[in-house]
Image (cartoon, rainbow, N blue to C red; front, side):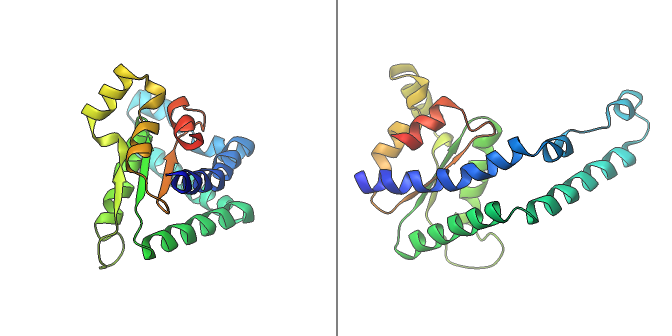
Length: 178
């Protein structure tokens, strides 16, 4: 499991640059804020609100395309995942709240078909087993809810994708540093 832990630490380091981008570029953060508060209060112009949101998404993607370090990190992570799948390894995904939903969705896309028909790829979202999460949280502490399943299930060469909006969720950080 030692080499599995090493593999686990590779992805979050690469993905961390994505979070650094969103924290360090104020214009990107501002684009994520919905500027439709007045329209929503009056329930008057939802089309304008939706239009603004779509324009913000387009502008965010355009800014992202200019971030060569982030594009490089995404390509590096993609290569690591492809290599792991080709070796017959699996990917373990996890996060809290909305990030947990993202982990579950991504795992489903790997196991399902994603963008084209292909054989299923081995992927698990660690947050979907509520009995495991709550038992570990109760018995060992919430900081262990992902570290314990990784220790139990990760094999050498497996990959882990830690998803955290802030990048500071203690249980997510603990799992990738264990």
